[in-house]
Image 1: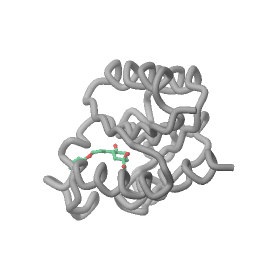
Image 2: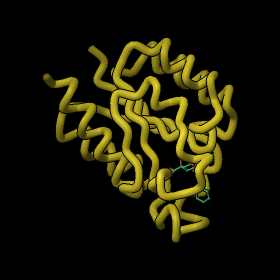
Image 3: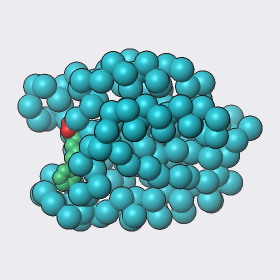
Length: 146
Ligand code: CA2
């Protein structure tokens, strides 16, 4: 079995740690990758973090995960609330899927309350800041070790 966990990020998340720290905090995606890699390594897993501002880019990364990864932790950004294409791609992935939102989307505007990705996700994290990514990686490792 693959020991690689993909961490996928959607549009605007390349700005993490650089804008709107009051909502998304001060950590960058590089910090997220480093922290998740440490959590995974303790359990014998590896991570690969990707970000795309394009819906099709995320779909292609999910297709690549089909070949390489045992689990996907995904923050689809605003595509969470709109993208049937990302849901369809995730439905074609056989491994674990964890959906991760930095902010508590349920405390925000009503258009953020619905997620297409949740229809496929094995677990959903929201409002734990960037620590949510590490918690998703930890959960993926635990389930895969069962
Ligand atoms: O809370 C989350 O993680 C979100 O997925 C973030 C999305 C938002 O559309 C979702 O409703 C909830 C937005 C990502 C934007 O990321 C930025 C990060 C730093 C600065 C500006 C944008």
